[in-house]
Amino acid sequence: MHPNSRMLSIIAGVLALAIFLVDALTPLDIAIAVLYVVVVLLVASTGSRKATITASAICAVLTVLGYLISTPPGYMTAAGAAPLARCFVSLLANSTATLLALRGLGNTARLREQIQMLNLTHDAIVVHDMDDIITFWNRGAHEVYGWSAAEAVGQSIHALTRTTFPIPIEHIHDELLRSGHWDGEVQRVRKDGQLLTISSRWALWRDARGNPVAIVATSNDITDRKRAEAALARSEAFLSEAQRLSKTGSMALQPPYSEMTWSPEAYRILGYDRDVTPSPELIAARTHPDDLARVSAARQMLREGRPYIDLEHRLLMPDGGIRYVHFVARRSNAAPLLPEYVGALMDVTDAAVTQEALQRSQAELAHVTRVTTLGELAASIAHEVSQPLAAIVTCGDSAVRWLDREPPDIAEAQLSIGQMVRDARRATDIIHQIRSMAKKRDPVYERLDLNVLVTEAASLVRREFQANRVEPDIRLAPTALYVSGDRVQLHQVLINLLVNAVQAMASIRDRRRDLWVVTERVQGVRYAAITVRDAGCGFPPADADKLFNAFYSTKKDGMGMGLSICRSIVEAHGGRIWAESPPERGATLRVELPLHEEVLQ
Image 1 (tube, rainbow, N blue to C red):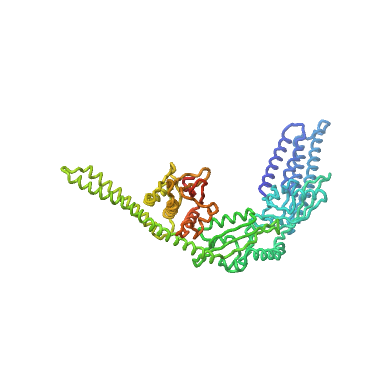
Image 2 (image 1 turned 90 degrees about the vertical axis):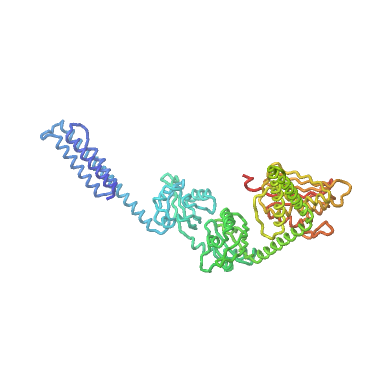
């Protein structure tokens, strides 16, 4: 017996005893025994037909027994007819309640049999009201969708299963109200997340007055059949799109449920056997750790339904080798309810290796250019180094003289020695810069102050300024401008721009050879800028873009590589460089570099 049924039986027994005691032992002139109806109804609510009949019989006996106890023998007078009538009414009420309860139990039993029959069918049968709230959920629905009746009843059918309709739901309701039924295919999601294609048949249930009260829906899972039917069409789209995009590995993907199809070439590129099931996780497992964020971003774009995806990344193969791939995909509209991407996975390792070789060659050329520039600046460098060395000698002589005095002037000697240390460090810094520029190495990015870089570069070409009577006007930003870059490469850019400006004014005789260098933060954007402007003859506006082409030079004996290398360095730092020739005279070169992240916070 169910615990609730046992509790109801106990309550009914206690109530029956209380009614009997009040009916038999108190002189109340009311039909107390009528309350036995409540006892019968309580027992009937347990669902047991036998217990209901037994309870009714016991209540009838208690009714008669209570009457006999409360009525003395020989009390059958006209006044004693009232208790007898009350007893008869109570028995009649008890019998009527029993009959009604037994009829209700019979109807309930028949309904349970009908529900059991509905549960025996393999079709999913769901009843929901006009607000889509589930009121009945059979065992077939449990098997198809994964939710039990206890979980489903009371929920919205379309919210629970995430239903996708082929037409607006309003049109379906109109068809139901018009014809009383609707047939069609819908997309639904199981409790475990599996996408299902459902053949659904709806019938409208009306009450006796013809008002719509509920919808009875039967459903069949036709996912496997639909997949089989769509396989030839998907294969044709797969082949045609892949051939159009690239004659390489082809892929098909159905987001957001990550069902994938790979061609044999795609298996080969990714390095998997043909017996494995394709999945985004397998691609992520092959992706180079440094490119995982990029691949994850592309996967998110697929989930969002972007019409076109273009991605380049690296694969880390089991043997430790690196493979470069280029993935392109386009969304297909062949099945609106089941969006699908058809794409191509191209192995571009050879092209990437060639590009890396080209970049190495460019780096070597930049190194050669730096060494050549150092040769051209030999006199300027010697001048810069000789100044602190001469100062060291002078301070050393002074220190000796101060120590030779009687008594020795220790304070002045210490001051001279301190100046020697300062000048020695300055000479060391200059030599360090020269060695860094002459050394062949990979770029090292660090946090650099653009004002300091300009000052250092100007010091290395100071001799060039003096020899060519150039008067530099260097205007630095009032606060530090931090950028992320390679010190040597940025020095190379600045020195090249300064030397070009000096050489552009070599033929000027009728005016001052002014040179302006300005550093500033670009308003409204997160960039720092360096502007180098000379007072030379300038260049034709049509040549502004040609200046940065390799082997193009406006100088008679120029190689045409300086500005080309400068552009490569600046763009590698995420910046840009361009040239202008103002109407008044001269040339302006401007470099913009992104500020360091710490500055942006």
